[in-house]
Image (cartoon, rainbow, N blue to C red; front, side):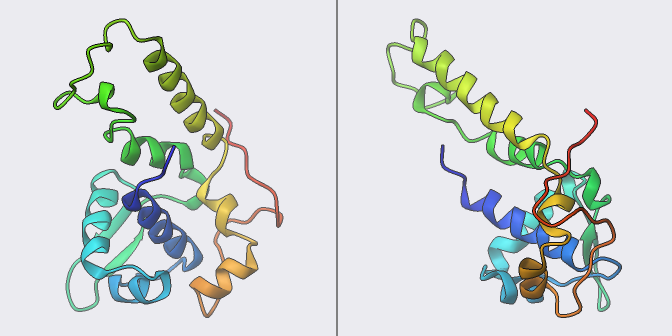
Length: 161
């Protein structure tokens, strides 16, 4: 499975916001630190805001911040929301599916199971676990460092799902 550029950029945006709690960050600073185009960022930021992962504020003093605390953002949820609309293979597409085997193909079932296992592997991981106490990442993302919620370095936070 290959992660789309959109999801990759979305994760950078969310990690940047988590590494800079308590302030609005700008698209320009994210673009600079995360090596992404502002045009691509604008699309991703809009989608993340519609999904409730980000809050945005327009205007001269505007910017963006996490839509909820980093320990409440499940990585599996982000990947599902952004990757699920992208067909895993031609036979998953509603349009442009020319495969004559779709109705009888067992590979399609196996691929569905594999994709679900991928997402389920990401479900115990929170944004907080990826960012907080990850000093190397925080040094890249935030000159001031810090996280509102923290977990021990190297540990992934588990959710009570």
